[in-house]
Length: 97
Image 1 (cartoon, rainbow, N blue to C red):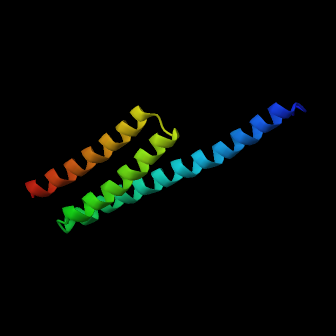
Image 2 (image 1 turned 30 degrees about the vertical axis):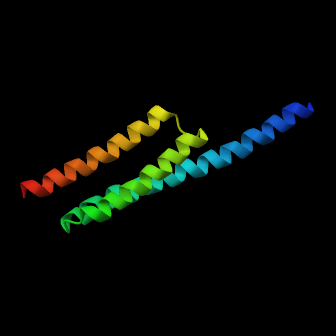
Image 3 (image 1 turned 135 degrees about the horizontal axis):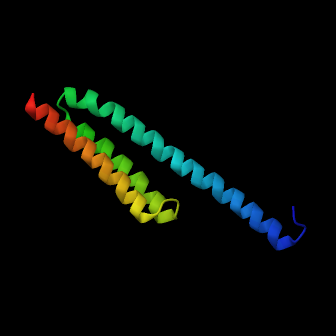
């Protein structure tokens, strides 16, 4: 490890940012998993309102991560698109039954 003061500080800052970024990414992954797992269960009850509330919570967390610079805006858009597509597929599955 370097003894240069600026290098030491840079290392500390990068470790701090790594912890923050990891917590954001972990929270997003957890919310996405919970949303996908509950999607089938909620759609069986034909409760689209609860699904849209959960979807908006995930969208909010993704948008926060994009604003903070944790995720690139295109990656955030891809994640949101994937979630909307999953909901659309679940709704269409119910309508065909």
